[in-house]
Image (cartoon, rainbow, N blue to C red):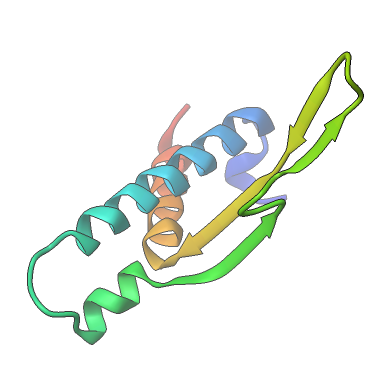
Length: 96
């Protein structure tokens, strides 16, 4: 394992990475809202190059009359999500 992760909790690492992905995704939405015509740079930051979904657009439903469940999972990764996670991990590296 990397030396900077030796004395840190894995749960905090996962939390920081997920928060970085979320912040990156929202920044991608903000870039997509910039007015003007679509250009290569804008499309690079907005385009989802990894789109994994289970039960989307309709989630998997299990209904046994007494209890009902719905299962679904959606993962969309774009360039800004990766940049957000990298910045979050860079900040986490200096965290004690």
